[in-house]
Image (cartoon, rainbow, N blue to C red; front, top):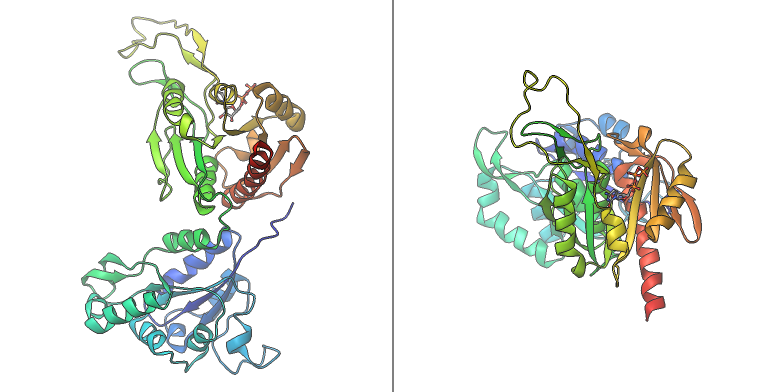
Length: 402
Ligand code: CTP
């Protein structure tokens, strides 16, 4: 199943030192499955070469109004047709001033004026230029004109000064752009997600855990946020940044995860169990470190943990429930058995050896209608497809309930 909703962004670069971050931005956008067409001003080409951006975006870079590669000879109009958004990063003080006045003396400013799609800009400039009343007036004006302004941030500047005006990081721009482009399929829905491993203590310093990195669960949380959902994320121990906009509760053990789920479940429309919850915990973990001189042989007694997903799905009025099944073989059969046993509407199945810790994933969706195989793709992309599928099933469930 390929992603039919591949988004297209025209990325404009103007002449500022932050242009070097645009190379990273192209990577971040393409990783999210967004097609990028780069347009550069002449000044931008003084900071970074079109060849670099062409190689990263996989598309020819345009810099000139009179480029004969555009069949109609009207690059200033044609390049933005079919584009979902124009993103200008970095946007200099000069470029922002041109937007205010509708000046169109080069390809990028003309595209910005002749566009039919939304425009997002990430300002980048020295702090005095940013603080100048003219720039502040211009920023206020472009906001009134409907331009979305991303940043800037405060911090060290290339000129050696410290202050407001540096461009926000490529990752933050990519996140904001993909959130902006995502269809709001889950607007208003309250989504509860578990992610990461659990850690079951043996003693004061040791424990039992698993290799789950949390990447898939965090990507699902971000995709749900992009789709307009209100997201609560209950996370086991991982080293990942919290998805912006999610309410995050950190837990360690399966018991703590269960308690956190119990606290939130009544206010949940959709529950997605991505966490690799330990099936067993140590009975009576020791308060102090076990000493091998005292206990040369050690036997641990393991007792089963509660099945959190199973419990949520068995509530009198359960939310829509989706689970993840990591199998090492017989993927479809085992995952479908799990789906029926836990009585959940959707089971996302993947091969544990391919998924755990990786940045890519290949999953199969199992629901009442059957099996849907998704192509191997970055977890971000897979997460968005899973959320789109959940939105479809959830919408159908709600229509039936009415
Ligand atoms: N899950 C849960 N609580 C548990 C164990 C798992 O909520 N105590 C959830 C996971 O978040 C995931 C799904 O159930 O959504 C995984 O199902 P499970 O049967 O536990 O998978 P495995 O541990 O892989 O099961 P098995 O050992 O039978 O393969």
